[in-house]
Length: 340
Image 1 (cartoon, rainbow, N blue to C red):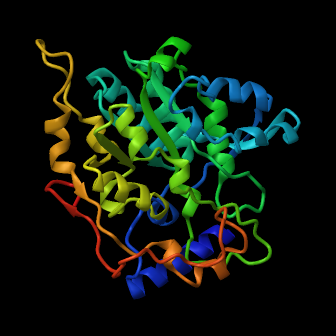
Image 2: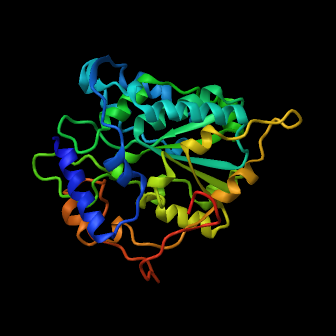
């Protein structure tokens, strides 16, 4: 049994006994996800070539949110590496089918997509959607860690996704007009095993994003975004948005931007356009999946988290910051449907 599985079982026992943590994508991926697939020897491009495949044009309004850290990790590997065979993951196949279905249905014009799947599946979703959609898509990679043989979370799995699939980048003109559909790609492994001290023999390559890493309310309003579609693998295993996204979700919700939770199964079955209307009615389809983002306890409110992290999670400060007026507890309430 690997150190990763031992940590997962310990955390699961803790969660089951105390029921302190809501289920988020990183919690579910740590416990219920498919095993990381066997590795195969993989030819690697240079970091510059990989970045050229994924980096958005500088004129793209969503380019400031791209993280290049993981893509730059390939140069030290010397041209080849043993990477997980992510093509064997069922969640990757499901992400491909879901993205193809969304592309065929037509993208909503006013939506920011936030795709919080294990990294390889997010890469597949972004690449497939951008290649199949009639409209230009800005796939925003946010992968901000490095792979390691003794790494706590499998960053090499996400890297394999970046190497295996390539998105269709928007052209400069579309980017300059701001006419692209933004799709933020996240790795659900990033906050896995949050309640564990990984020990001295494990490289803590977990990380978190901050509100500065995501578009703020002003940016969304400037780009005509009125709704955020949050994509997880399975809503049965994800009660709320990931902890590091919570401040941004709260701010977006408070500004009147609609927040909708969906999973891959929902997207696989999204309605096809009718003969007289090439766009599906996204507003009607998403209405039952609208959520209210309530203030809640997150990882950064836990005073013991900073002692456990040992420098992981991209820590920018050394103590919890309690938000003014925070009273603890709470969750989101669904407006009906599978988000609740």
